Length: 206
Image 1: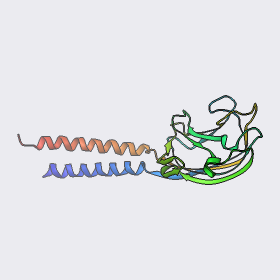
Image 2 (image 1 turned 135 degrees about the vertical axis):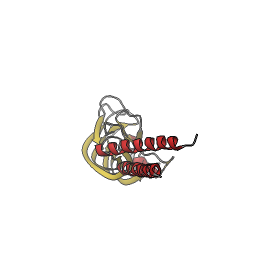
Image 3 (image 1 turned 120 degrees about the vertical axis):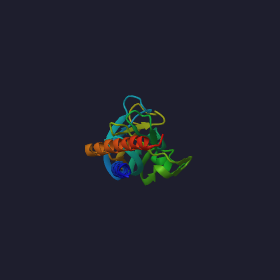
Image 4 (image 1 turned 90 degrees about the vertical axis):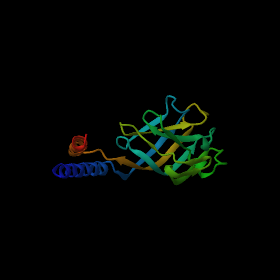
């Protein structure tokens, strides 16, 4: 009976440790707003000369939503529907593409000039032209969300388009990192489970 009470107390300690670990892994909904102006959109993606902006969301942050308020000018000789922005982690292994003209009018944008675009999208439940499903993604351990402004066609020797003003709001979650004390509780919990197993073996009739 004494061994059984001891085992139960250790199992209770293990349960406490497990609940503490679970609480530390919870995610918090956050937003970050970035305001840019006079950003040139020059040439093809990843070619030299494009503007790249790095936004620090925090290590392993998961991008869920995106809201924009953009004024965009395509210079004469180019089309406004050719300007876009890539959103990716710093390695560009995970990437999405933001084409404001396409989202506003999938059949339009075949002209130069200035347009204003606003909108919002939830990448977890994406439902746009040709794209449905969960397209949310995580950035890397460096926490960097990489924004590159590019063109589908390189029509002009200089900038094909100018993002006159752009306000972007990113909605994301960050998984909390366990505090040092939590690691100690986790080890206690694992140790308790091990002791319980040994006690059970020692109490098993031959």
